Length: 351
Ligand SMILES: *Cc1c(COP(=O)(O)O)cnc(C)c1O
Image 1 (cartoon, rainbow, N blue to C red):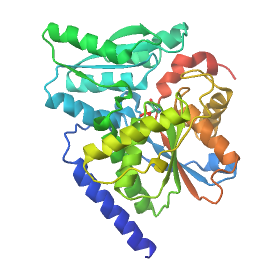
Image 2 (image 1 turned 135 degrees about the vertical axis):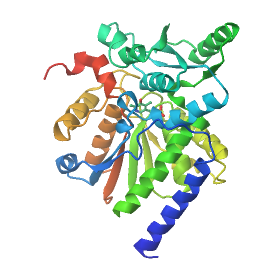
Image 3 (image 1 turned 60 degrees about the horizontal axis):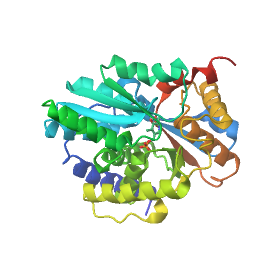
């Protein structure tokens, strides 16, 4: 097969999945397609493969980020069920909570957010600035819970209270990570591979930060559905590898079932590297801080301390160790999160 016919068939398979996605309820919340751009100063600095960035930090909603793609499908389901409010949860500096609050505002739904204190930080910038400030600005009702709380159970309790008051709540799981939300990242695969084909770009590997697993699950399912051999790697920010991969695999299987495209998910297609978590979720590492500073200075890009900064630290280290030797083009999926920088001002407020 020549390059042209290969690309045509990738595009055909993407079109088929695009038509499948079009059968699901969806509201338009994101600015799509997000740009796919080379990071040439970073690539030169590292002296390895050419590194590209898929700008899902530019999805547009309240500062952007990866949750907006998921919310397009989740909020449409909330509307279809005639919900009058949504409930979700996350860590104090949750980007997901902020994007949910903004999406609810657009659709005229009340938004209830439960924030779990997973770091124990008492710095007012952490507890009330950054994403938290934006949650309030979008009009969300914010409740706080101590670290280790069963947040899913707390959402159920709150939903019962709201129902008793005559409301119709729709619960969005943490990170929007369920088979409905993950469709947003099936959509991202279709978008990215179509974009790459139009640019005549052969992507060898796709790397991103993985947390509540919906992003990677959607990418795994999407890549399987379009029969792509792009090497996908999630950089973990919380759980150990085995647990993270199992979470992603289970959700990828459920997402494929929900999509109804009829492909098997290979367990080996789910790869997480959890060597860059450091002391724990939301707790900084030196490598993350170096990576965030480096990209701000080399590329004028903003990454975040909790997710994309650790993902980037992993990518940089792996490139330096030669893990991508022989590969030409690596795409880093920028999942957003720069609002959280203001919650971690103590790390970055001087040189
Ligand atoms: C939520 C989030 C992620 C991780 O996505 P999951 O779908 O939860 O795995 C990565 N980066 C940022 C900035 C996020 O907010």
